[in-house]
Length: 339
Image (cartoon, rainbow, N blue to C red; front, side, top):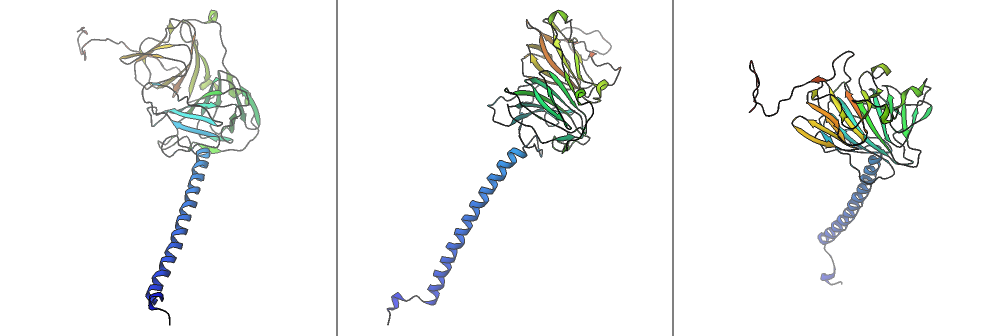
Protein backbone atom coordinates (compact mmCIF):
# COMPACT_ATOMS: atom_id res chain seq x y z
CA UNK A 1 0.00 0.00 0.00
CA UNK A 2 1.26 3.46 -0.93
CA UNK A 3 2.05 5.88 1.79
CA UNK A 4 -0.81 8.29 2.40
CA UNK A 5 1.64 11.18 2.13
CA UNK A 6 2.31 10.30 -1.52
CA UNK A 7 -1.30 9.83 -2.60
CA UNK A 8 -3.21 13.04 -3.46
CA UNK A 9 -6.75 13.30 -2.31
CA UNK A 10 -9.47 14.01 -4.85
CA UNK A 11 -9.64 17.61 -3.60
CA UNK A 12 -5.88 18.06 -3.98
CA UNK A 13 -5.95 16.60 -7.51
CA UNK A 14 -8.72 19.07 -8.40
CA UNK A 15 -6.65 21.96 -7.10
CA UNK A 16 -3.65 20.83 -9.14
CA UNK A 17 -5.75 20.50 -12.31
CA UNK A 18 -7.20 23.96 -11.75
CA UNK A 19 -3.72 25.46 -11.31
CA UNK A 20 -2.55 23.73 -14.48
CA UNK A 21 -5.57 25.02 -16.41
CA UNK A 22 -5.02 28.51 -15.02
CA UNK A 23 -1.41 28.46 -16.24
CA UNK A 24 -2.60 27.40 -19.71
CA UNK A 25 -5.24 30.13 -19.78
CA UNK A 26 -2.69 32.72 -18.62
CA UNK A 27 -0.28 31.58 -21.35
CA UNK A 28 -2.89 32.04 -24.05
CA UNK A 29 -4.00 35.36 -22.53
CA UNK A 30 -0.46 36.70 -22.66
CA UNK A 31 -0.07 35.36 -26.20
CA UNK A 32 -3.29 37.08 -27.16
CA UNK A 33 -2.08 40.37 -25.72
CA UNK A 34 1.12 40.08 -27.74
CA UNK A 35 -0.82 39.44 -30.95
CA UNK A 36 -3.11 42.39 -30.18
CA UNK A 37 -0.13 44.66 -29.50
CA UNK A 38 1.50 43.68 -32.81
CA UNK A 39 -1.79 44.31 -34.61
CA UNK A 40 -2.16 47.74 -33.02
CA UNK A 41 1.39 48.69 -33.99
CA UNK A 42 0.81 47.52 -37.55
CA UNK A 43 -2.48 49.38 -37.84
CA UNK A 44 -0.96 52.51 -36.33
CA UNK A 45 1.97 52.38 -38.74
CA UNK A 46 -0.39 51.87 -41.64
CA UNK A 47 -2.64 54.68 -40.53
CA UNK A 48 0.36 56.97 -40.18
CA UNK A 49 0.84 56.52 -43.90
CA UNK A 50 -2.77 56.47 -45.05
CA UNK A 51 -4.51 58.57 -42.41
CA UNK A 52 -2.97 61.19 -40.14
CA UNK A 53 -4.58 64.03 -38.23
CA UNK A 54 -5.04 67.54 -39.64
CA UNK A 55 -7.02 68.74 -36.68
CA UNK A 56 -9.64 66.85 -34.67
CA UNK A 57 -11.04 63.96 -36.66
CA UNK A 58 -9.19 64.71 -39.89
CA UNK A 59 -7.44 62.16 -42.07
CA UNK A 60 -4.59 62.45 -44.51
CA UNK A 61 -3.81 60.05 -47.34
CA UNK A 62 -1.24 57.62 -48.70
CA UNK A 63 2.19 59.17 -49.04
CA UNK A 64 1.46 62.21 -46.84
CA UNK A 65 2.52 62.77 -43.24
CA UNK A 66 0.68 65.73 -41.73
CA UNK A 67 1.07 67.66 -38.50
CA UNK A 68 -0.71 70.74 -37.18
CA UNK A 69 1.25 73.85 -36.29
CA UNK A 70 0.91 74.93 -32.67
CA UNK A 71 1.66 78.57 -33.49
CA UNK A 72 -1.25 80.98 -33.09
CA UNK A 73 0.30 84.43 -33.54
CA UNK A 74 0.25 86.52 -36.73
CA UNK A 75 3.67 85.15 -37.82
CA UNK A 76 3.89 81.37 -38.26
CA UNK A 77 7.06 79.50 -39.14
CA UNK A 78 6.81 76.00 -40.67
CA UNK A 79 8.48 73.06 -38.96
CA UNK A 80 11.70 72.18 -40.78
CA UNK A 81 12.46 68.81 -39.21
CA UNK A 82 14.50 66.42 -41.38
CA UNK A 83 12.50 64.94 -44.23
CA UNK A 84 11.82 61.28 -44.78
CA UNK A 85 10.74 59.76 -48.07
CA UNK A 86 7.11 60.88 -47.89
CA UNK A 87 5.44 64.24 -48.33
CA UNK A 88 5.65 66.23 -45.08
CA UNK A 89 2.64 68.55 -44.72
CA UNK A 90 1.86 71.01 -41.96
CA UNK A 91 -1.46 72.71 -41.34
CA UNK A 92 -0.33 76.30 -40.75
CA UNK A 93 -3.76 77.85 -40.25
CA UNK A 94 -7.39 76.82 -40.41
CA UNK A 95 -10.72 77.02 -38.58
CA UNK A 96 -9.15 75.58 -35.42
CA UNK A 97 -6.23 78.02 -35.43
CA UNK A 98 -7.49 81.50 -36.17
CA UNK A 99 -8.50 81.34 -39.83
CA UNK A 100 -12.14 80.48 -40.51
CA UNK A 101 -12.09 80.96 -44.27
CA UNK A 102 -9.48 78.43 -45.50
CA UNK A 103 -6.97 75.73 -44.68
CA UNK A 104 -3.34 76.79 -45.28
CA UNK A 105 -0.93 73.88 -45.70
CA UNK A 106 2.85 73.96 -46.09
CA UNK A 107 4.09 70.85 -47.91
CA UNK A 108 7.62 69.60 -48.57
CA UNK A 109 7.74 67.00 -51.32
CA UNK A 110 11.03 65.05 -51.37
CA UNK A 111 12.53 63.90 -54.65
CA UNK A 112 10.70 60.78 -55.78
CA UNK A 113 7.74 61.30 -53.43
CA UNK A 114 4.12 61.05 -54.51
CA UNK A 115 1.18 62.79 -52.92
CA UNK A 116 -2.26 61.24 -52.42
CA UNK A 117 -3.85 58.96 -54.96
CA UNK A 118 -5.92 60.87 -57.49
CA UNK A 119 -8.61 62.87 -55.72
CA UNK A 120 -10.96 65.80 -56.12
CA UNK A 121 -12.37 68.27 -53.63
CA UNK A 122 -15.86 69.63 -53.15
CA UNK A 123 -14.33 73.13 -52.89
CA UNK A 124 -11.66 75.09 -54.75
CA UNK A 125 -7.98 74.46 -54.04
CA UNK A 126 -4.91 76.50 -55.07
CA UNK A 127 -1.23 75.50 -54.95
CA UNK A 128 1.80 77.78 -55.13
CA UNK A 129 5.17 76.18 -55.95
CA UNK A 130 7.53 78.09 -53.66
CA UNK A 131 10.65 76.20 -54.76
CA UNK A 132 11.53 73.31 -57.05
CA UNK A 133 9.08 71.95 -59.57
CA UNK A 134 5.91 69.94 -59.10
CA UNK A 135 4.68 67.18 -61.37
CA UNK A 136 0.91 67.44 -61.61
CA UNK A 137 -1.59 65.04 -63.13
CA UNK A 138 -4.96 66.56 -64.01
CA UNK A 139 -7.34 63.95 -65.32
CA UNK A 140 -5.26 61.93 -67.77
CA UNK A 141 -2.80 64.73 -68.57
CA UNK A 142 0.59 65.07 -66.91
CA UNK A 143 2.11 68.53 -66.55
CA UNK A 144 5.01 70.25 -64.80
CA UNK A 145 4.53 73.36 -62.66
CA UNK A 146 7.77 75.39 -62.37
CA UNK A 147 8.98 77.45 -59.43
CA UNK A 148 6.61 80.31 -58.51
CA UNK A 149 3.74 78.85 -60.50
CA UNK A 150 0.21 78.91 -59.18
CA UNK A 151 -2.01 75.88 -59.79
CA UNK A 152 -5.78 76.22 -59.66
CA UNK A 153 -7.87 73.11 -58.93
CA UNK A 154 -11.57 73.98 -59.16
CA UNK A 155 -14.03 71.87 -57.21
CA UNK A 156 -14.54 68.45 -58.78
CA UNK A 157 -11.30 68.44 -60.81
CA UNK A 158 -9.48 65.06 -60.50
CA UNK A 159 -5.79 65.58 -59.76
CA UNK A 160 -2.71 64.38 -57.94
CA UNK A 161 0.94 65.38 -57.74
CA UNK A 162 4.48 64.07 -57.34
CA UNK A 163 8.08 65.23 -57.44
CA UNK A 164 9.98 63.55 -60.26
CA UNK A 165 12.92 65.92 -59.91
CA UNK A 166 16.16 65.64 -57.96
CA UNK A 167 15.49 68.32 -55.31
CA UNK A 168 12.83 68.84 -52.67
CA UNK A 169 9.81 70.85 -53.81
CA UNK A 170 8.00 73.24 -51.45
CA UNK A 171 4.31 73.88 -52.02
CA UNK A 172 1.85 76.20 -50.29
CA UNK A 173 -1.68 74.80 -50.48
CA UNK A 174 -4.84 76.85 -49.94
CA UNK A 175 -8.10 74.94 -49.55
CA UNK A 176 -11.43 76.70 -49.26
CA UNK A 177 -13.46 75.81 -46.20
CA UNK A 178 -16.69 73.87 -46.64
CA UNK A 179 -20.28 74.88 -46.05
CA UNK A 180 -20.29 73.22 -42.63
CA UNK A 181 -18.10 74.23 -39.70
CA UNK A 182 -17.55 70.50 -39.15
CA UNK A 183 -15.83 70.09 -42.53
CA UNK A 184 -12.18 69.06 -42.48
CA UNK A 185 -9.49 68.64 -45.10
CA UNK A 186 -10.46 64.97 -45.23
CA UNK A 187 -14.21 65.47 -45.52
CA UNK A 188 -13.68 67.90 -48.41
CA UNK A 189 -11.72 65.26 -50.32
CA UNK A 190 -12.82 62.14 -52.16
CA UNK A 191 -11.12 59.55 -54.42
CA UNK A 192 -11.30 60.22 -58.14
CA UNK A 193 -10.54 58.41 -61.38
CA UNK A 194 -8.51 59.78 -64.30
CA UNK A 195 -10.64 61.14 -67.10
CA UNK A 196 -10.07 63.38 -70.08
CA UNK A 197 -10.06 67.07 -69.13
CA UNK A 198 -9.90 69.72 -71.86
CA UNK A 199 -7.18 72.38 -71.82
CA UNK A 200 -5.50 71.29 -68.60
CA UNK A 201 -2.65 73.75 -69.22
CA UNK A 202 -4.98 76.59 -68.19
CA UNK A 203 -4.71 75.48 -64.56
CA UNK A 204 -0.91 75.96 -64.41
CA UNK A 205 -0.08 79.65 -64.07
CA UNK A 206 3.65 80.48 -63.93
CA UNK A 207 4.57 83.90 -62.55
CA UNK A 208 6.79 86.25 -64.51
CA UNK A 209 10.01 87.22 -62.78
CA UNK A 210 10.48 90.90 -63.59
CA UNK A 211 13.83 92.75 -63.43
CA UNK A 212 13.94 95.65 -60.95
CA UNK A 213 13.97 98.11 -63.86
CA UNK A 214 10.44 97.01 -64.78
CA UNK A 215 9.04 97.22 -61.25
CA UNK A 216 7.14 100.21 -59.94
CA UNK A 217 6.23 101.29 -56.42
CA UNK A 218 3.71 99.11 -54.65
CA UNK A 219 3.19 95.36 -54.89
CA UNK A 220 3.50 94.74 -58.68
CA UNK A 221 0.93 91.97 -58.29
CA UNK A 222 0.32 89.10 -60.70
CA UNK A 223 -2.84 87.11 -60.05
CA UNK A 224 -2.37 83.35 -59.82
CA UNK A 225 -6.02 82.77 -58.92
CA UNK A 226 -8.91 85.19 -59.18
CA UNK A 227 -12.51 85.47 -60.24
CA UNK A 228 -11.65 86.25 -63.88
CA UNK A 229 -9.85 82.90 -64.17
CA UNK A 230 -12.57 80.84 -62.51
CA UNK A 231 -11.61 81.09 -58.83
CA UNK A 232 -14.64 82.75 -57.25
CA UNK A 233 -13.55 82.28 -53.62
CA UNK A 234 -9.75 82.18 -53.37
CA UNK A 235 -7.84 85.20 -54.60
CA UNK A 236 -4.05 84.83 -54.76
CA UNK A 237 -1.38 87.01 -56.30
CA UNK A 238 2.40 86.97 -56.51
CA UNK A 239 4.07 90.24 -55.49
CA UNK A 240 7.49 91.70 -56.30
CA UNK A 241 8.23 94.73 -54.13
CA UNK A 242 11.06 97.21 -54.60
CA UNK A 243 13.15 98.28 -51.59
CA UNK A 244 11.54 101.00 -49.46
CA UNK A 245 8.20 100.30 -51.09
CA UNK A 246 5.13 98.35 -50.07
CA UNK A 247 1.37 98.19 -50.01
CA UNK A 248 -1.19 100.65 -48.70
CA UNK A 249 -0.56 102.64 -45.51
CA UNK A 250 -2.31 101.48 -42.34
CA UNK A 251 -5.57 99.87 -43.43
CA UNK A 252 -8.04 97.07 -42.77
CA UNK A 253 -9.89 94.53 -44.94
CA UNK A 254 -13.41 93.09 -44.80
CA UNK A 255 -11.85 89.66 -45.40
CA UNK A 256 -8.93 87.53 -44.16
CA UNK A 257 -5.44 87.74 -45.63
CA UNK A 258 -2.52 85.32 -45.55
CA UNK A 259 0.97 86.26 -46.70
CA UNK A 260 3.79 83.85 -47.43
CA UNK A 261 7.21 85.47 -47.81
CA UNK A 262 9.12 83.92 -50.71
CA UNK A 263 12.21 86.12 -50.67
CA UNK A 264 13.49 89.21 -48.88
CA UNK A 265 12.71 90.74 -45.51
CA UNK A 266 9.42 92.55 -44.94
CA UNK A 267 8.50 94.97 -42.14
CA UNK A 268 5.00 94.41 -40.76
CA UNK A 269 2.97 96.81 -38.63
CA UNK A 270 0.19 94.71 -37.10
CA UNK A 271 -2.18 96.46 -34.75
CA UNK A 272 0.05 98.02 -32.09
CA UNK A 273 3.05 95.81 -32.93
CA UNK A 274 5.90 96.06 -35.41
CA UNK A 275 7.84 92.98 -36.53
CA UNK A 276 10.08 91.58 -39.22
CA UNK A 277 8.87 88.76 -41.43
CA UNK A 278 11.52 86.54 -43.00
CA UNK A 279 11.51 84.19 -46.00
CA UNK A 280 9.53 80.97 -45.51
CA UNK A 281 7.25 82.55 -42.90
CA UNK A 282 3.49 83.07 -43.04
CA UNK A 283 1.49 86.05 -41.80
CA UNK A 284 -2.18 85.53 -40.88
CA UNK A 285 -4.19 88.76 -40.82
CA UNK A 286 -7.80 88.33 -39.71
CA UNK A 287 -10.58 90.55 -41.00
CA UNK A 288 -10.56 94.00 -39.42
CA UNK A 289 -6.97 94.01 -38.08
CA UNK A 290 -5.12 97.21 -38.98
CA UNK A 291 -1.79 96.60 -40.71
CA UNK A 292 0.73 97.64 -43.35
CA UNK A 293 3.71 96.06 -45.14
CA UNK A 294 6.99 97.59 -46.21
CA UNK A 295 10.05 96.13 -47.90
CA UNK A 296 12.76 97.59 -45.69
CA UNK A 297 15.53 95.47 -47.22
CA UNK A 298 18.01 96.25 -49.98
CA UNK A 299 16.67 93.79 -52.57
CA UNK A 300 13.36 92.95 -54.19
CA UNK A 301 10.98 91.24 -51.75
CA UNK A 302 8.65 88.54 -53.06
CA UNK A 303 5.52 87.12 -51.50
CA UNK A 304 2.22 85.51 -52.27
CA UNK A 305 -0.86 87.16 -50.85
CA UNK A 306 -4.10 85.24 -50.46
CA UNK A 307 -7.49 86.95 -50.09
CA UNK A 308 -10.01 84.80 -48.23
CA UNK A 309 -12.65 85.15 -49.44
CA UNK A 310 -11.89 87.19 -52.51
CA UNK A 311 -13.73 90.55 -52.29
CA UNK A 312 -16.66 91.19 -54.63
CA UNK A 313 -15.98 92.98 -57.95
CA UNK A 314 -15.65 96.77 -57.74
CA UNK A 315 -15.54 96.69 -53.92
CA UNK A 316 -13.00 98.57 -51.81
CA UNK A 317 -10.41 96.04 -50.68
CA UNK A 318 -8.12 98.37 -48.69
CA UNK A 319 -10.02 100.48 -46.16
CA UNK A 320 -7.75 103.31 -44.91
CA UNK A 321 -7.47 103.77 -41.17
CA UNK A 322 -6.09 106.77 -39.25
CA UNK A 323 -4.04 105.46 -36.37
CA UNK A 324 -3.28 107.90 -33.56
CA UNK A 325 -0.84 106.42 -31.09
CA UNK A 326 -0.76 107.88 -27.59
CA UNK A 327 -4.22 109.44 -27.73
CA UNK A 328 -7.27 109.10 -25.54
CA UNK A 329 -10.37 107.47 -27.02
CA UNK A 330 -13.22 107.75 -27.73
CA UNK A 331 -13.23 111.11 -29.46
CA UNK A 332 -16.94 111.79 -29.77
CA UNK A 333 -17.74 115.27 -30.93
CA UNK A 334 -14.30 116.56 -30.06
CA UNK A 335 -10.90 116.97 -31.64
CA UNK A 336 -8.47 114.22 -30.54
CA UNK A 337 -5.90 115.46 -28.08
CA UNK A 338 -2.53 113.90 -27.48
CA UNK A 339 -1.69 112.77 -23.97
